[in-house]
Length: 401
Image 1 (cartoon, helix red, strand yellow):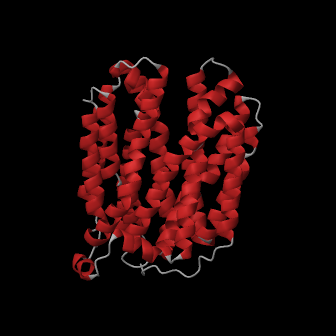
Image 2: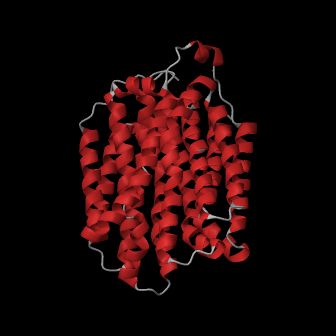
Image 3: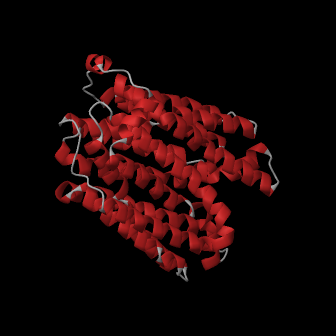
């Protein structure tokens, strides 16, 4: 089997295990703070939950460009292993925290050393033939989504059986296994001597060089707006489901609404990736942005949970074409030797969207309601589609495969 295929298979499992591990506890963070930390005041629980959840994204946003710079000089696999083994250790330590501030400190540290998934994207990008790039990115994305969908389900089952703390130990073990698989099986042809001979460039200098490439700047903006649009109403979805369905089996229906989007996303990503190899990632990105924008509109007008499930399933299909297309286009336009740095800046934009979106949604939902947030997301994604459609992605600066 060709090495790029081996890398893709191993990193698919690595992404799946990483995302499954990371999402096992986060949906139950507020319950964990109540049961194991003795917090009883609802406002205190909500405040600590928000701060602890966001802490990871704050430091990830700040440090991803630094890791990207180091990856361009020392190789992607080194950064992959650094992140994987480091996150495994920090996650296990979270299981020993006895105060909320300790958990916050560890989440900040976790964000600082995180980056398994961006490193996996960069490594697959660097080792995959250009004509297979779309399908490879789609397959890799499906592993991340599968982990995101199944992680909370496994976390809920483990929590019922063993309590919350053991989930951190299980998550740490999964991250360690993912990193061990990468250590043994993933191969990367990286010329360290050539990289060392390149002029040293700071993060700021790297940003200044990439800033002059308009398609890359458009893609960074697209990534931020994609995550912002998805996340601004995410934490409010259980309340919306309750409004539609009542309190009967609320946890089940809220979980199902989230799961159907992930399932259709997972199924569509490889198919849309293969389509992008045929007709171009630019066209698939415009199509996916426009489709996702349109699918947010009916969510503001549904009157029953079954209607919301249908719309969210269709939304997931279009979401499946976004991240793989963006990653493929970034590789096309990143200068030689700066591919990983370009991906790291993109990862920072993703973290920023994950951080700002829920905060904005929580603040503004009282004014415009969750329905207003759906319509705002629709407008942003449709404007995004228009921006991408009018951006030229033909002058690629990628190194040859």
